[in-house]
Amino acid sequence: MITEKFQQQLAELGITLSEKQEQQLLSYYELLIETNKQFNLTAITEFEEVLEKHFLDSFAIAPLLPKDVIKALENGGSIADLGTGAGLPGIPLSVLFPEAKVLLIDSLEKRIRFLETVIEALALKNCTAVHARAEDIGKDPSHREKYDLVVSRAVAALSPLAEYCLPLTRVQGLFVPYKGKKVTEEIETGEKAIRILGGETESQKDILLPQTEYERTFLFVRKKKKTPDRYPRKAGLPTKDILGK
Picture (tube, one colour):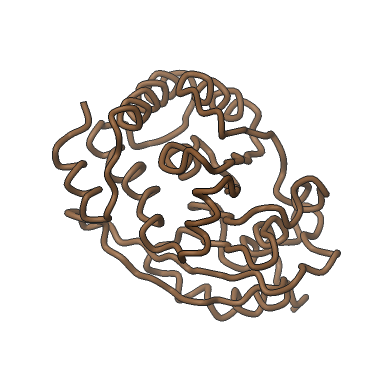
């Protein structure tokens, strides 16, 4: 069962899960741990740690989202989770926003097979997993500038991450990277990249996950105009300075 502490932590975020949603998270945990015995998905396996460091962390964005994005997600809007790995934060967000369409993107095929198993087991009719490189899917017309919210957790530094994610974000949509407290070291270069890619940072929100010592920083980047066609660049280049320096 979901622990009372986890329910209290969610309550502090203003989140209450239904019995069905709690069961979906429990099923997800069981599949995660079972599959983790076959190949590495996460170093965090203890139940309470998974609840806090994976699920609570994934949910922490929800109460911070602007009203227009919440409204979109509650009315069939879309989320893309780039570099989703074991499905974080995309699977928890799919559980939390059952009306939203959620796309899980990862470059490793065996992780995609695991995610397809999770999607089927949890009956997440709103969720799809796709095997793709970030540099390629951002150029794909069926995905380019289509998503109301693009998220990414523990994938890359801000500058290359913006180059991967902003091409997927629709104009007036939101790109929100999950970052740690050292994000200030990335911001100067990252902000230049964000502007070139058509974005503008609206706010930075630093939070302490309820009843934990875990810090999380969210950058809320609004897509103001279309991303120039040359971005994202081919594989390897987004790790270099977007200004070519």
